[in-house]
Amino acid sequence: SQTIHQWPATLVQPVGSPLSLECTVEGTSNPNLYWYRQAAGRGLQLLFYSVGIGQISSEVPQNLSASRPQDRQFILSSKKLLLSDSGFYLCAWSQQGFTGELFFGEGSRLTVL
Amino acid sequence: AQTVTQSQPEMSVQEAETVTLSCTYDTSENNYYLFWYKQPPSRQMILVIRQEAYKQQNATENRFSVNFQKAAKSFSLKISDSQLGDTAMYFCALVSGTYKYIFGTGTRLKVLA
Image 1: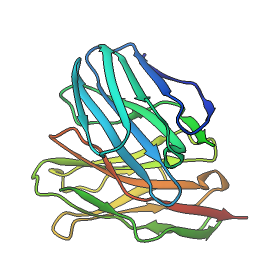
Image 2: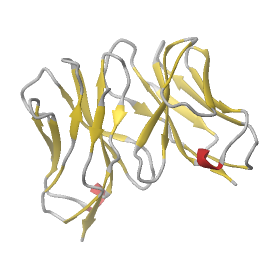
Image 3: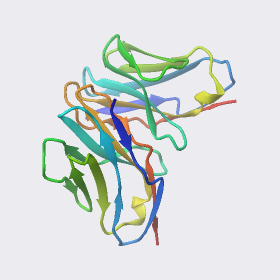
C-alpha cells in the first residue's frame, strides 16, 4: 500500500532563518507531488506541484522554493523565512496520469517568530 | 483560471439531522473531477466523496451524497443523520487535466449533541 510521510511535524524558526520541509511517498512510482499551505480563513493554497523529476510548477510568487531530487521525494525550502510564512504545510500526492484522489501527509506546523 | 468558492464559513447542525454544504466552481475544462475533503481536529485530510464531471449521476457514500449541477457549476454536499464525528472543516476541490487541485476556503461544521 502507498504511504506518505512528511517531516518535521512542528517547527519554530526565527525570521530570516532557512527552512526545509521534506516529504516522501512510498509504494508507488512517478507520482504527482504537491505542496499546500493552510492559513486561517484562506483554505488550502497550492504552492508548488510536480509531475516528474525536475519538473516544478510554482503557483504563488514568494520566497519559497521546491525541489524534487528523487522520484518520490519533494522538498519545500526557503533561504530566509518571513513572518508571513507561518502556517500549516501539507504535502500530497496523486497517481500519475489519473486525476483521482489526492492523498495527504500529516502536515507540518511552521511558526516564524 | 479555475476557482472554487465556499460561501459558508461556518455551519452547525443538530445530531441526527441533515445539513448541506455549498460549493460553486469555475473551469473552462470539459473533463474534471470534484471532491469533498474532511479535515477533523487532527488536521489529517480525508476524502469524503468524489464526482466525475462526465457522470450525470450524483455520487453517494453512505450518509454522504452530492448534488452535482454541471450547468450551474454547483457541487453541494449533503450529510444525513449527522454524527458528532462529522465535526470538521470541509473543503470542496476541483482538478482537471492540468493536475492542479484547487481548493475552496472551507466550511467549518459543528455537530451539536
